[in-house]
Length: 493
Image 1: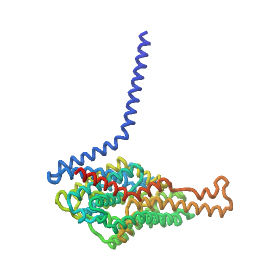
Image 2 (image 1 turned 135 degrees about the vertical axis):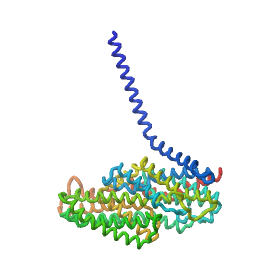
Image 3 (image 1 turned 120 degrees about the vertical axis):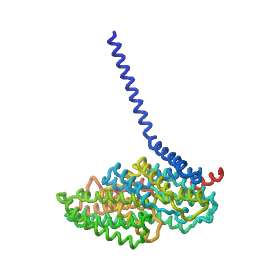
């Protein structure tokens, strides 16, 4: 009797333990999605508290504290969305793991923002609003606040829908909308807005075209050759040297403004010198690395892995140095106006503002970045090291060309345009080879008709349409959102 009772007690205990374990598993499953938002919210609150405690009373007014909170929110969204363009191709090509990409991007973005980030930023986002039209400091502060909030909200919404968008264009739209709400349509400098609108087309088309041209060169010079290893030994050092030269020029132009100002001719000279040096170093290394490799495409891919990792790091550094300043521009403008009591066309960025931007980008990248990294690196089209190399190189070359021509381009549009360019070239090349093979063999497979081969899609159209739609509506959507927020603020304040 007692033995049966003990067995029943043990069975009941087992059932209770199972219930507890199931409850623990359920609580972990439910709380996991809340972990990232919780950490992000904690960071935003800590930024506000830090500004309140560490700045003196005159500078740490409630407006500055509020602006710092929204600036931190904006920085989180930059990390979640914009940074994916720099490391996504390397992750998609399997040259970097997701963890490695997150660490490299977080370190390089932060270093670029703090060490080489622009010390001066335009308060009116590249001259789209006439400062005279919003000369009242109270109106100006709330207009900048509205633009900051709207840009952050729009980038957050785009991240949720998996669309990589330009944070700079989001800020431009926010400033334009608040300016219109504050001073009417005459306050907008429409020729400048026309250039920015043109960049929506120029950036991705130029980036995609250059990426496709380089992929075509690699295929016809290396991949389609009978002796792939010999072709790789000849051309891969040239491509590595070219990448080194282009990125040296890119960093000299866009990533080192705070340390030293260089014109484009000096930057190009630096790029040529470093490119030749890197070619001289890489040629014997590639020859040594090629020993014992099989004569197939997989062997060639290995030769591009290290340059691809370096390109991801350099793109992240240059992005942190160049784009973070634009994103925190409204916050810097609010701080300057509150501190000095006047509206200035350009203001210095306080170090604590750049620190908020740098740390916020790192947190946003680590907490939310993987989603956009996977989309850019794998979901739009399949990437390998050679295709990702073409995307990275095209991004740098396009920025250099745009700087030379004085065109306001978006690094996001360029990089994603490069991915599209690579994918559409693969579709064209696949159709071309299928037609050639059918003509040569005079026989078409009965199981796979030639027409079906031609219809093979290597770029996912759903992602293509989502991204293009997000690009087109970024400026007007952020503008409308900013105008509404400004009117709400004006009504209550």
